[in-house]
Length: 497
Image 1 (cartoon, one colour):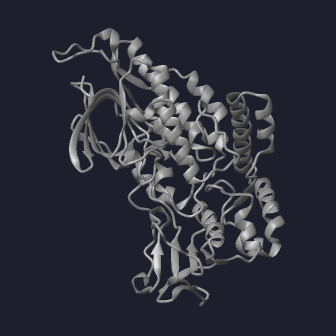
Image 2: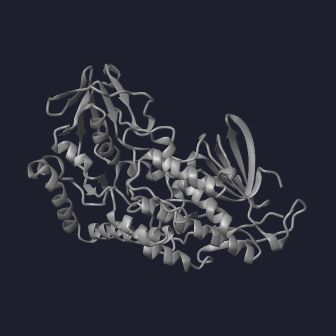
Image 3: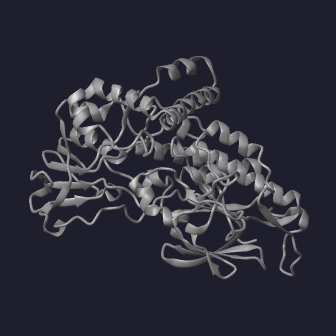
């Protein structure tokens, strides 16, 4: 078997890909696999985003991998810390030796006759071909090439600099400069205090407000637990505790939105006061209909309250040479405009997917247990929760993928394919009304209206259900067939000979 012909190919060397590799090593020790990463470094999203203040919305006790507990003092870590954590983890478990960097997968075609995937790959611009029996996409769901910027009128006549956070330029010095941050989501809430700390005169321009929740940056209970218990036990306790808190707020928000809204308003009011709440922090949607904006140490609200940044709620009519002309007639003068206006969704890293010569329209597929796709054999993708850390859901997914591989071995089968029942009502896979979700949902797989075609946004329920799942439910299997070129015996399906 050549290096480019393996049992499992993982696409992406971020949190998902590193977690998938650990599970394959520990649960499938005879399975050959490799990780293809388009970028030149480990980290995925955390290697891509380099804007000021970039950090995790999720606490590190749930975002970190269970077998590599987070030992930092901050519960919300910055991008550089997370990148270093991922590099150290990959090195500690030998996962870095499985990664092939600079390899962008452009096309993947399944052949039922061969029971293999063939991948077209650009290796630093040069074509390569890889093959595998099972394909696992751990690419996240953002388009890494570019974010989303609305078509602003007059932008070509603006004299300053326009920057999207996803493509933050190296060496951009904002000290003493007027910076307008357009947007009200998590990225804007992160940028505003970081830019103010860097010496910029910041004005945040939002069309509509978002819900903001202040959280503690340090967990004093974690330090006490570490004095008495082993790291992994502490990690388990904190992961369970923090998952329960985040899921609890989500459930209250969905079942009793007025109660959740009152709770969030009370927290914001304590920092910025009632007048500011009424003018700038009264969203038109309920809590958790869009992703909640997290502010560690309430840094964002304190920056507004201290007057180190201004917030303006208005409509942008157009760019003018000196800045932004608003619907009220005001002009926000700016040397730099940061368009924190959202991201673009992209499934499976944008590769073209083909099954037996037929292109697959991902927007017309259903996600089986939130992982495999209807009508597509031997393929899984890793998607996180909308209300909790990416890693919690990813770990559930990795375990399920290993269960599917084991089932194929045990039943002498070469492929598994979910088959969606007729009459199922499609629902967005990411159950949010955020702009980036709405814009991209036609290009993304759907979830259904019944089990096992739904995603529970509840880690406790989800992991138990997937652990007990009947692999054969709504799945079709093809028994292993002898081929003249077959190098694997029926007893070693999916394993290296």
